[in-house]
Length: 70
Image 1 (cartoon, rainbow, N blue to C red):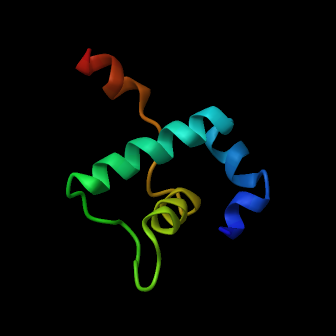
Image 2 (cartoon, rainbow, N blue to C red):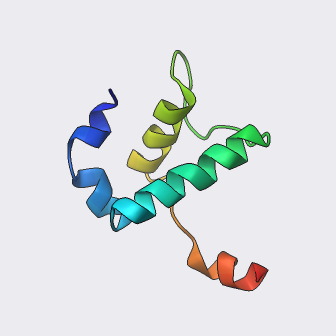
């Protein structure tokens, strides 16, 4: 199990469980479409990489870009 998910720190960092889930889903889709990871991936699963990116503050939900795209 991913250690960051055992505590509510990451949930509070993102702003809630729903936002965390949405951020993970969006980033996972980006990675499946060819986006490069922003952290060291040696021996990590995709989900572990995404969680590490969130914990390190490399990715966040950007609502402004979502509004501009619509």
